[in-house]
Length: 301
Image: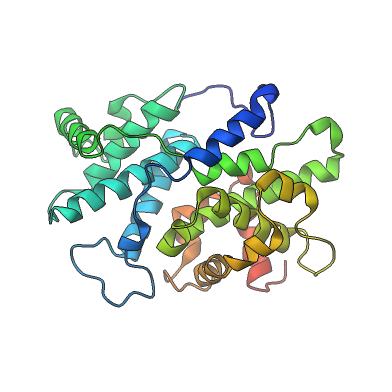
């Protein structure tokens, strides 16, 4: 198991550059993104063999999460790997290529992403061991070359998690213990919601900054203001996110429906068995999945 120091999301050693960083994130967020409208959604009855159906794509999302857990990878690595996978699959679709091994593609995308995002990237043999050495090194290298060439070596993009971290960046000296706990709780809830909503291409079409804002809004609504008391979206959050409450509400319906469908077992017979749910049931994420399951499904805790 790889061990390395973890920097908390709310630590900000580069405060003097924060405004410039945020400006750059907003400017770059529409670059190097798949055309999500080309992926059939849950309501699309015209799925065909060429397109990656929404449920098949959801299985790969859970596969990436399993890889992430096993190799102890960052959230950014997960999002970049999925971005590369989606973009490359669309390239194959445009060329009517449907026979390529998508498991090998997924593994290679994660291998590429880790080299960009990880401080201490795993060795290739660690990736190969996930599939019990089903693939050879040369196969992964060849697939890596095909993916990078198809994408013109345009790898990096901006992820929703990048915005969420910035939206939740506070000076801890200004917060009491309850405020710190609430902040971390809502941050974890928003991460969970963002990954659930990846199943819905229409949600993924939204700008990453808006995805993060919507999921943070819903996390606060369910975790802090579930009884309807208090203001979910205050002036400070409008300033931090550049989104007003009305902006968020215009685009919130897709996320709400996707989350309710997830907890209603619409996408699977047992959502609690999915790697996505298991991931957020751990102490690392304050067991936020269990908490939200009780709240959304009206269960007595």
